[in-house]
Image (cartoon, rainbow, N blue to C red; front, top):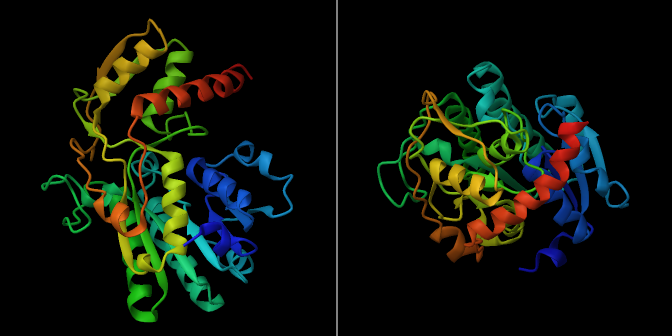
Length: 325
């Protein structure tokens, strides 16, 4: 199905829309002519991520918490599609596991109830590969047992279960996308960001790159623009109803290899140091993405190092201003 034909003129809500991934989803939806309502409480998102979209008549920003039923009710009213990307991030869970569950579980339930009340046609839910826990079957497909080993994984699994219940009980058209180690422009570079942006910030600040553990943890890094395509495909293709998809490139890179290559690519004389392993950190990811490729036709960028270079170039231009401000 042509996403532009289906979504042009339709009201779509993007929660976490001022965040890293959500802002890219907003950008593409605005480009194809949807009426985009970007929702964010700015606990993790930033106005600068979407300021460039404000000049468009089909874009608006609402500051609201997905757990606030009253505020979200007026946002959801009249919406055709909800792209639910708001979340309490993985790094937050060890600091405040109650917030983790409140946002990732309760916030999702709140939105689902409002979506049903207002007759929203489609609910696309952003989840995570952390729901698998430490995988025991490789490559890991969507039928792998769900045994999360972190608070974050548990809270995101709670959100998934609510989505599944609403599909089964009320025939709501829902799709779950499990994200894996996303990288790209606008990624948060503080302690709550992804490893690519954290390493880059340290390189620009001439600080050591800290690897927790021995660095042999494997990750399946996924370019953010591929996730945008996955979201739009999930929203517009009938095959996606009630389905769960691994939204991952399938590329395998170790954290140590990433650090060494980034130092080389940036010609940066910074040391790589090792710290204690993180609680709940998963060692191996080998992700099977055949379902999303076969059913929805979503393809993933395979040139990791090439797109990483493009990402680094963008980050250098933007982060220097942030760091020196």
